[in-house]
Image (cartoon, rainbow over all chains, first blue to last red; front, top):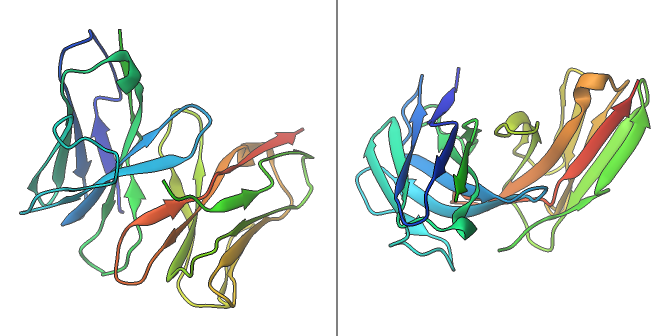
Length: 117
Length: 111
């Protein structure tokens, strides 16, 4: 149980285009999901908290107009990188917190590697 | 952003050896978790700790939540080649689901 999927697993795009990444909880409902960014050989940095039915909460220094988050249902959150630039190239990972049972354990997706040319 | 201090940064050990790594913070956490990440994959939960002083095992892995709530350690006994990866600790504050991640310990096991 507690499986989280991400799509696509990797994407290459041209500078200036927008890219959408999906995060799905496959066998549980999740009101709360998170989006992280990870640079090579570095730790995970929290970008934002995605809440079903309300606006996402962004961490300090993360541009909300650049990284659009939509938590459309209790099993789906999307991250859209708008007008992507090479410096946006990174490994993006989502996680989800099961609504039941109520703990704060996060289950992570397999990640999406974004390369912006 | 804020991170937890994890040590050692990297370890090279022989197969069969035991491994110990720890995580420290200046902040008090409500929950400590240990994850393993392999290249190109997302982190996988190993052990979750919810009470100060709690000692929990998962197979060859043992983790403890420090009494002060500011530290945790992870031990791996009788290491095997598939233990290779990056181990991250993570802490969360009371009343929030947000994690702060450690800097990671990169483990390599020599057969």
